[in-house]
Length: 200
Image 1 (tube, one colour):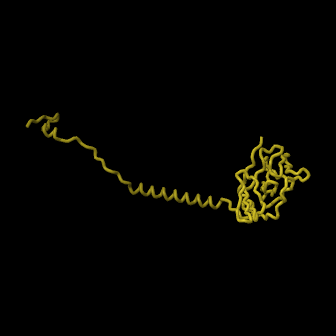
Image 2 (cartoon, one colour):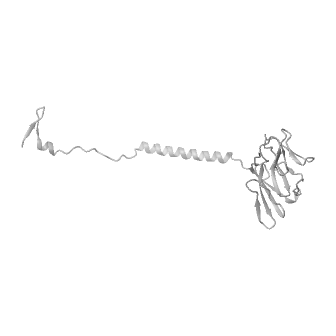
């Protein structure tokens, strides 16, 4: 057996030196420590608490309107509606803040607020039209723009009509008229305002 001399005077066997395997890195799977686990639990608990609190606050602050109150559902008697005509004066519903307009093509619930700057307009029977006293916007009894600074037709509210045979019909996405001939019940949802179409 041959021996070699180490620089510091130690004899090392060449055979032993070649037989020693190279050192391999010690790889072990690291688990979650108790402290990290508690951090995760606290984080999840806080996230759940925030979600529950946010949900409760949103539920509490969302408006809930009763029937017969603005923002809620108004039930109307068809017999109390104005007669269907192009010149018939619409009837106001002050509690619901809408005009009940029954024209030759059907019934509409028109918002009482002008589409210009939010003034309250009125019906002028001598001119058979709506006129805003603030800036002079004018509209037909169907809610269509005639003249003035208003950028669009009058806003409308969604309508559902229940007929004597039990069938129902709802106003379209533009708040178009609904026939109330043979109607048993008219419902106006003041929580669903439909913007009037822009003109020009």
